[in-house]
Structures are given as C-alpha cells and as structure tokens.
Image (spheres, rainbow, N blue to C red):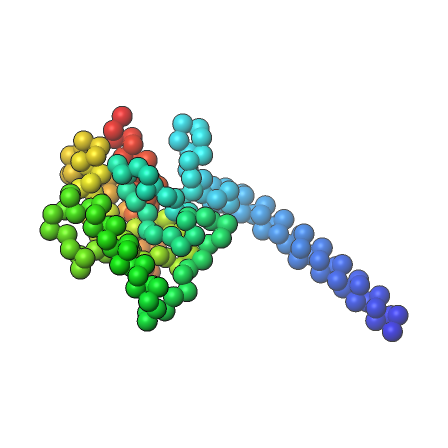
Length: 194
C-alpha cells in the first residue's frame, strides 16, 4: 500500500509540473513568438494607450455618434461571458428582443425613416453566444451609418466606405458571414472627424 501511495504522489507531482507548469509555459512562449499581438489579447491602441481589444465588444451606448455593439447579457464584461440560455419559447427572450427592437428603432429610425421592426437585423436585438461578440453584421452597420454620419457631420458615403473598409470577410473565406468590428470602425470614424 505504501508503494502505491508513493507512486500516486509521484504521478500527481509529475503530471502537475508537466501539465500545470511546463505545457502552459511552452504554449505561451510559442504563441508569443508566432502570434505576438494575438497572444496579448489583440489589444488596440490609440495614441499609445490601450482602448480595447479586437476580440471583445464594448458598450458604446453613451456616445450616440458611434456605432453600437450587439446587446450583451453580461454588460460587456469579458470576465463573465455567457449567453442568455433562453429558448425560442421563452417569454423573457421575447420581452428582451421586443425591448431591444424598440430601443433600436428609437435610435435609428430618425435617420432611416422607412425602418420597421421587420427590417432590423437579428444581431441588433439578439445577444451573441459569448455576450461580447466584437462584430455586427454589415446590414446592421449600414443602418447605423445614417445616424453616425449625421451625428459626426460626415457624408453618409464616407461612413459607408469606412464600414466597407472595416468589414472582415468570412473565416477562411468559407465560414460564417462577413462582419464589421465595431471598435475598429469607431476608431476609423473618430479619425475621420479630426
């Protein structure tokens, strides 16, 4: 029995060192060399100061002159990412979508007079699986372009050009849909207004 106990303790220590220390250090070291920007969280800097990450959505709702991210059930907190876990028959989900749609229409309809609830892109009223998806759909960005152009006194064509320039293609050219990174786009808008 004593032999089994010693063998077990040696195995625990060896596996802890190997998979708890050595493996994470090797993976971190390789990622720092191969993907230095991504390994540090794809941080975005402006004037030498970190303003966010390309991988995590931010709440821009306080500034109506900028593009808005998708709704987030975690208030854009990356430490507690989660989806709502509400099913298609959930009254709470229906109420949240109705509330988000009303807010979207209130914000965007003055700049898109023909906009109806049926014309709202799904990503404008539904949360993403992580709750902090940094992208919005191209359709959502195109609708928001009217408000952003008016609030920043920019030609709408210029804002639409910035939307196009900040649109990421499908992953590997095959998977998903094109998306617009909201942080990158808002930084481009701020750069255009200087």
